[in-house]
Amino acid sequence: MQEEELVDGKVDWKGRRAVRHKHGGMKVSLVILGAFALENMATFALAVNFVSYFVGFMHYELADAANMVTNFMGVCYMLSIVVAVFADTWIGRHKSVLISGCFEFLGLALLTVQAHYPNLKPAICNLYDKNAVCEKISGNHEAFLLIGLYLLAFGSAGLKASLPAHGADQFDEKDPKETRQMSSFFNGLLLAICVGGSVSLTFNVWIQDNKGWDLGLGISTIAIVFAMITFAFGLPLYRIHVAQRTNPIVEILQVYIAAIRNRNLSLPADSGELYEIEQDKEALMEIEYLPHRDIYRFLDKAAIERKSDVQLEKQENPSPWKLCRVTQVENAKIFLSMIPVFFCTIIMTLCLAQLQTFSVQQGFTMDTRITKHFNIPPASLPIIPVVFLIFIIPFYDRICVPLLRKFTGIPTGITHLQRIGVGLILSCISMAIAAIIEVKRKNVARDNNMLDAVPGVQPLPLSIFWLSFQYFVFGIADMFTYVGLLEFFYSEAPKGLKSTSTCFLWSSMALGYFLSSIMVQIVNSATKNVTASGGWLAGNNINRNHLNLFYLLLSLLSLINFFVYLVVSKRYKYRPQGHAIKGVDSQ
Image (cartoon, rainbow, N blue to C red; front, side, top):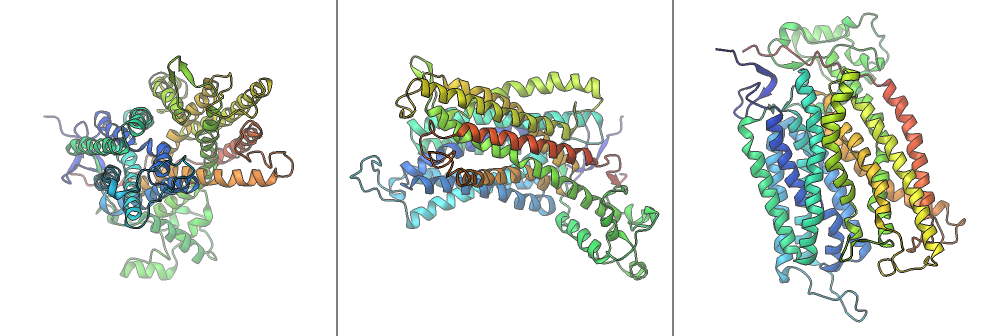
C-alpha cells in the first residue's frame, strides 16, 4: 500500500495533517471560487446603485448619499486588514470566512427588511417636484440603516481578507506543479469577480430598479447564503492553515525596535554569528526558517547577541524586543521591501476611479443605443471591462501562460513583478486613449453646435462604444496588476501574514479612491484662473471643461510612476522558497 504524502504546515478541518491528493488542490479551489463569485453577485452592484437608493428612498442629499457610499467602501477595504490579522493570528482563515459570511448575511437581511416595510423608511415622495417636502430618514430608522450597512461592510471585509488567502492555502508553493496551479487560481479569482459582477451589474441592478429594492436586496441575501453553503461544502477537503497564536505584525515591529536599540553595535563579519534558534529547539516544533540575506543590513542589528543576551538565553528566552532571530529579521526585510511596490500601485486605482466616474458622465452625453429598442444605461458601463475580462482571463491562463513558460522557465509565465509592471504601463496607455477619445467627443459636440446639449436628452451623434477602447485596455491592465498584486503579496509575505498581505491590494485601492478625490480638488484649484469654466473639471457641463487634459495628466503621472516602479522592482529580492519550513513533524 502506497504511503500517504503529507503536506507541510497544513491540517484538515479536524486538525489532522493534510494529505496530498486528498486535501486541497485545483478541484477544491473551484469550490472557493464559486463561493467568491456568489459573494460578488450579492455585493458588486451595490457600490454602483446605492446612491440612487439613498437619494430616492431615504431622501439624502446627493452629496451626502455619495459620501455614504464612499465611506462604506472605505470602511469595507480598511476593515479587511483588521479581520485579516485576526484570521492569521487567532481564529484561522476558514473560520473567518464563515463568521464574516454570517455578518454579511445579517447586514443584507436587515437592509432587505427595511426596504420591504414602509414604516421603517420615509414616506414615498417625488423628489423632482419643487413643491414637495420630502422627509429625510432619521432617528431609529437611520440607525437601522447604518447598522445594516456596516454589518454588510464588516462581513464583506472579512471575506475579501480571508477567501483569497484560504484559496491559495490549497496549494504547496514548494511543489512546481502546484505553484502553476496557484497562479491559475489567482487568475480564476478575478474571473470569479467578473462572473459574479456581471450578473450583479445586469440582473441585480434591473431587479432593484424595476421590481423593487426589497426584492433586489433579498436576492443578494439569498446569494450570500448560497455562497456560505458552497464554501462549507468543501470543509472536509480543505488544507487549513493553522493560526499562529502570535501576532506577526508585532514580531516585525520587534525587529525594528530591537534594531534601533542595538544601533550602536557593530555588525559581525560572519552572518552565522547572528542569533537563531538552535537546531534541537527547532525540532520540537514546526517553525519557519529563512536564510540570511545581505539586504537592509541595518536590521541585522536586531539579531546581534550581546554577552548579557547569551547569559540570559541559558536561563530563559531573551526579550524579543531586544533580540530577534534571523528568520524574524528576514521577514521584516521582506515586509519593508514590499512597501515601495505597494505605493507604486496606488495610482492604478486613481485611474480606475476616473473610469467609474467621469467616463460614466461622458457616456451620458453620447448615443447609448445598442438596438432600435434597447439603450445601455451609462451607469452599467462597468460591465464593459467585466465582460472583456471574462474572455481574456481564460485565454491568458490557458494559452499565454504556457507559451511564456516555455520561453522563461517560470511556472507563472512571467514573474509577479513583471506582471504588475505590464498592468501599470497598460493603465498609462488606457488614460492616453481616454484623452484621445475625449478630444474626439468634444470635437463632435463642437462641430454639431451641441456644447450646451442636455446629457441624456440630446445625445451626441457618437456611439457610447467609443469608450470601450479605454475600458478594454484598462480591463487587461486589471488582469495583470491586480491579480499580480494578490499573487505577489501572498507568495512573498511571512507565513503568518498571508491574509493580511493580500489586504494590501484592498488598501491600495482605498488609497487610490481617496487620492482621486484629492487630485480632482487640486487640479481644479490649480487651473481655476486659467480656464473659462473655473477649472479643468469645474461645473456640470462636461462639454466645456477640459477632461481630456486631466486624462493626459494622469497618463503622464502613470508613466512617471511606471519608471519609478522599474527601479523599485529591479532592486527587489524575491523571498527564498526553498527554506520555508524546518523541523516539521515527521509523523
